[in-house]
Amino acid sequence: MKALRGKKVLIVDDEPDLRELIGDAVKAAGAEIVEAENVTEALVLLAVHSIDAVISDVRMPGRTGIDLLNIIQSDHRERPVVFLVSGYSDISHEEAYARGADGIFSKPCKFQEIVDSLTHALEARKAEWTRKAQRVSAWLPIEISRGGASIGTIAKVLNLSEGGVFVGAVSFVPTIGESVKFRIQPEGSGAIEGTAICRWVRNKLEYGLPPGGGLQFTELHASAKAQISSLLEKTKTQ
Image (cartoon, rainbow, N blue to C red; front, side, top):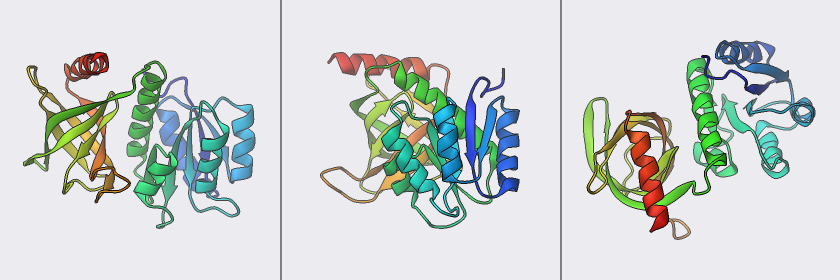
């Protein structure tokens, strides 16, 4: 079964060629596509269609993709997943996620990466809607490795959810957009292992929040989902 079957995706870009290329990749995964060349057209389509996800260029004539993200955040109670695409330094990854974006990609685009991230984001959103307790506080050691080399137990998991973790560390090693392998070791049970992508980093203590970064799960070993669900239920009860 195609990963995005039954989903409707709005692609917003003033470049027809890029809309077509992204659209072809998303359609190949089973989604239905609607297109807009600016924010005004996008808002009309959002009003008349049930849109599951928006993929928008940032820099366009008139209002920008950031403007569209802000409008969606303020006007849509059950808002669609929103991904931004940019060939410039219009917005940092951390700011994009702080504003509510579910992903940000640089041009030239890696279309399969967009499809994979879109698929995961929609799966995580479905779980979020059906789960009352979306995340819990935790204090679990996490070991991270990249390129086959272990960085070591560099940090502690401070928040755990079905979609990812917040890792607290004095010096958070992964960079934004980097894919890493991880191993979380709960006390008295087997390890939770898989791969994740670093979505944002906070380099210092800010507003009472510790330094660290957010890791979004991209692949979990077979038993990991059950272990995470069990930890969520156990911690929520406590």
